[in-house]
Length: 433
Image 1: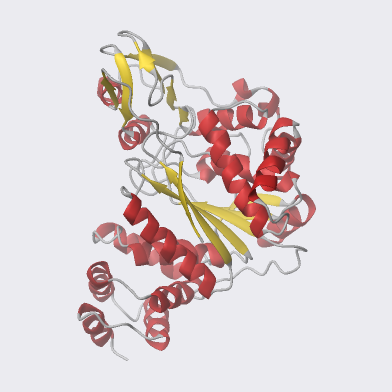
Image 2: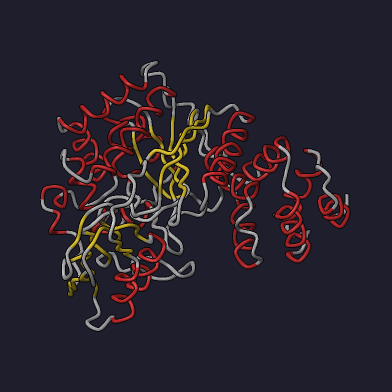
């Protein structure tokens, strides 16, 4: 085979065979295909797309480019959850203990934040001492004994995806549904799971800005899961405003603890219970999402989910004292209130703008390798639909720099205030099976 022929075939709208895709990915990992040819192929995919079987074969070739974890020694169904990325999304930190408290195995391999979206691993590392770099044996043992672990992927998992992701980032081919779906599913399936629930974000603070694009991505993800015998379902959720009231790593851990204590923001609780219900059904715990939602709500109320979170923090070396006293989490030196410039109603909150503001403070990365400040971020005091008076506090900025005029201006501008209240929005935007 020749790479130039595969590029031409895709450029002209053809579908590559499994053998062609397997050869291409294997050759690229062995550095027998140069980046400039793979870049041309990625651009051809961006414009011409992929058929369902192509997407499944593409994801399969990437997942088999490296280590595929064997979790068969762990009894029972192994299930995971993946979010396509949002602002203030701390759901994994709450969801894993909820499932574990109900005896469901949740071996979660998570990622770090890049750009305006936060990363689960970064949030957990705001807990002093928390270790996300367990060995595979430690990972298996922890899930077997306590049903949950959240770790980082090793460099041996889906190495083709790691190289292709970096290449997509610099060739303007990130926003391709087949490439996004292949990237996500190659990493998730390589973790040895039996079932997967996907939280596909839609809105201004998500990569998928429209309902149509979010549905296309959800269908692509579910199609790949089915082709690889992984039970898969997607939930579409709104990201036209941040999830919860906090943006920033330690701040989001504190909100996680509040939610596990039976408090926490309504939207965080609602999304957690919705995703937990779907996962409990896929795991075979019950046939009814209504019953499953009730089970999830119970463990949040009665302290079992909090105990499961405490056990995970202990297992992974974190300072368990923060659960009883979140004040022990990293704290910023300065807190600055951002005031409403006029009275009215919060019509819209630009999630992406707030995510970028938090990134400028040090809560996120502009590029891979940037050092994070776990203490900084934003606390929201108003959400979409709430009334405000001129001078009310819209948000509090937690920073370790005294002078941050550009950040403060960006945060204030992210809140759109109008005379009339907006129509109520739906957090859960749909399901794809």
